[in-house]
Length: 291
Ligand SMILES: NC(=O)c1ccc[n+]([C@@H]2O[C@H](COP(=O)([O-])OP(=O)(O)OC[C@H]3O[C@@H](n4cnc5c(N)ncnc54)[C@H](OP(=O)(O)O)[C@@H]3O)[C@@H](O)[C@H]2O)c1
Image (cartoon, rainbow, N blue to C red; front, side, top):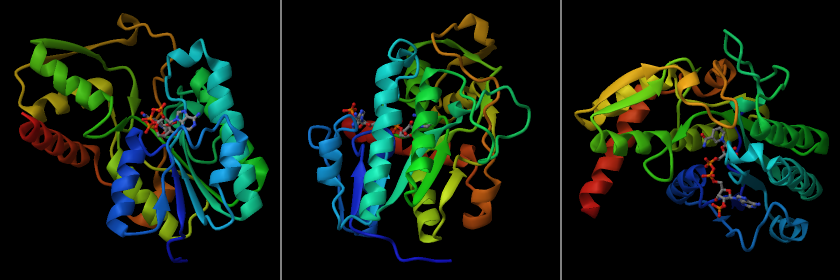
């Protein structure tokens, strides 16, 4: 089923990595959207949710979240207030005004110890505090009964914001050698590609749970190798294992999301090597203009 694009739209978290990509897509589509700043819309403030999600809003796109994965181990309550209860209140409000909610979630709602991709219907069993907070949000969306499209994604990157691609690209110019873990497998996701595929799912009238990532899969070492290759830096990338980089939050060994149901609707998702090449090219262009 194909639908017209619902509008007006409320875009939340527009200043974040994915929100920035969404703004560009909505500008290009010339649709009617508003994107309140944190001071005007806060997931911890129910009044601000009710004020911004008015009767006329047809579509709410929620890119806002508490995303500090390691810090969440110490701040699980705050992470859950934002990613759990706050999202629940947003979903209740969407139900009340009959707006569709597009929400993003994560591979960390799964334990990450599988050896085949996680399907959208797989049971939630989060691997860390951040994952638990996002799982609460997913549950409350389901319980609210609002019209929803929950898109789980993983390993986000973009030509802006703090992310693995820009960090490796910078480190590769500063160091002769980098060690990167090769025992964690997943699917990188270009934020720009994710926003565009989300539009395609909305146009197709998709609802329920879907997974959207780039095509293909890799480990962080392979991802870093490709980043360095594309930047042209003279830096050696060496594989190492996770025990050499202990982090406060558990990272899954295998968190590949199954994208089959998404590909049935929108066609084959672009391979991560192609999306990565596009992002590195944009980043290098920006650097040239700025210098
Ligand atoms: N990044 C990844 O690798 C990754 C992987 C899997 C899933 N995801 C999911 O994808 C979505 C987008 O992630 P992202 O990386 O684009 O996030 P991000 O860059 O950290 O942006 C999150 C945005 O949410 C805002 N925000 C934080 N607390 C808020 C609150 N209480 N009320 C309203 N806004 C609030 C932030 O504002 P301030 O900056 O002002 O705090 C920021 O603009 C999230 O749902 C995330 O869980 C991300």
